[in-house]
Image (cartoon, rainbow, N blue to C red; front, side, top):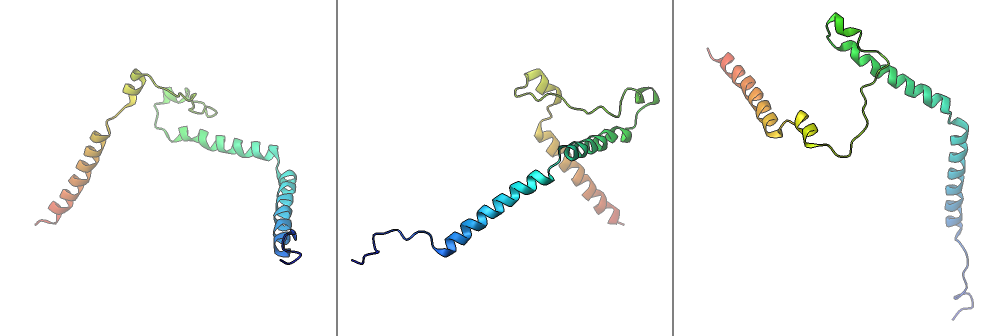
Length: 120
C-alpha cells in the first residue's frame, strides 16, 4: 500500500477555483444588493402601479350622478377570507356547466350563421 493512499490530499485545483468563483459571485451579489437597492425607488414604483390601477374607473360608463361616488385613489380591495359562508358563495356562484353550455351555444350559433350566409 502506498504511503499517501490513506491521507487526504485536500481539494483539487479545479474544485478550489469553483468554490472561489461561487464565493465571489455571492459576495458581489450582496454588495450589489446593498448598493443598488433603494426603498424610496421601490415605494415610487408601487405608487405608479396604484395610480395606473386607479384609472380603471375612468373606463366605466356611469350616469353623471354616480361619477362623484368613485374616487381615483380608491382601490377595490377587501381582506382575504379563508372560509366563505354558504350565503356568500351562493351570491356569486355560477355552475360551470351552465357557462360551458352557454359558450357552446354561442359558438355553434355563430358557425350556423356562417353556414346559412353561404347558402343561396
